[in-house]
Image (cartoon, rainbow, N blue to C red; front, side, top):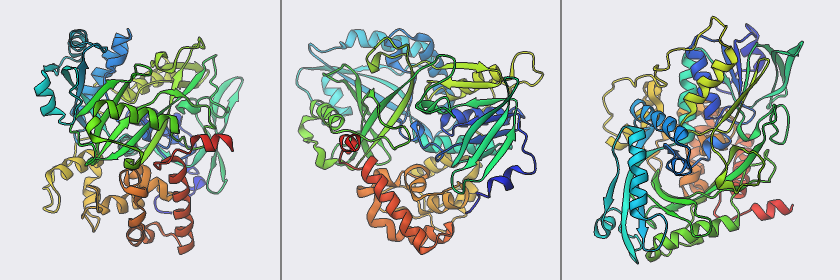
Length: 530
């Protein structure tokens, strides 16, 4: 398989590391980036695919957490706003500003005065003024299909939006550039200790069951909702309890709900903010927030109740559009790793701050936000290394992302496509441009070159790795891109080195996963009953 040699071949020369990171989501990737950038010999392993869990199924928002500020968590909001600004400056095209519009209706919370006061504090903490107030007529200029009944106006502010899976992949690429070894489909089966102190990890390649032991005085568990590995069922050490919460989203054709900014309203059922926002040529509705009691080893999926919940807010915000289940292109559901105190709060009332614990060389991270991945990584590494260790982390001001090479824009690429490719691939951009086909995949701004580049360099093991995480092909095209599979086969099967039977098996696997976890038809209740 291209660029994924056997486990013993990778590790045999030097099976000793300064730090082993378990978990290949954004938190694990951030730890690998900071560790390798600090000169630590670093190994990252992920038992599924990179970004398989929460980090490919988030709401795609890079934000300061206005809701957290409103619930009395200014420290979390301040930290997230600082990180938001760093990311916007370092990786334009991967993380971009997005205006948010909150309409205000007579007799409904929040009123415009209160919300503008909250935004004033938000802008102050973020050290950038983005807020403004729109009168009803101005609101329609921003959101033409908006419900105007009892409309008092709208508040505007700005945050950021990203492709979360590509964010993980670019951070991993930066870590590898500094020497980190990063492997997907590699399971940590045992934490090795001597006299209670961590000495290493036993690993198993999921594909061929090959096992290998590595030595390390520091292991960082960044497995999110799957916390506490190699324990099961989301249990964490040191008395921490993870409460897995599911957030689900609907993907709609942009033509059916054309928005150019994020539009939000508090849901009448539970008062949660729900958003409609543009993403990769589609419009996304999300998110829900409820307990996820399913088996965490299975792909989470939306329920019929969640579909109704999200369509209800679409009807409130955009009644003239008549959005229904027939309009849904795809869905996705992610599991948030929230630390709970067990007091029985509703999901939306749970604290979103992260917790980090240490136990003689085993550091465990629970909770956290996508936006603050760098800060969480540095906290975990500092705790794991210890204050008496001569090894130090690189400067807190050091950039996460290296500069993008200055290259002329190919004439076959639009300015918007060039902006996105520069952000998503960074220093790997020259290699991407060496791919033979820069033409767009029909119905998307995605380029065929991105698919073949991923097959060659990004540890694609299964077809769903390619279509749901390396690219978002399967989320933004009807039926998961079914009609383009023959063309995809022509482009990618030779690069992957798959036999005809392997291609058929992978297509069948992908169709099954898509039908169960990403299609417009809710499968959650049916799966739960089986």
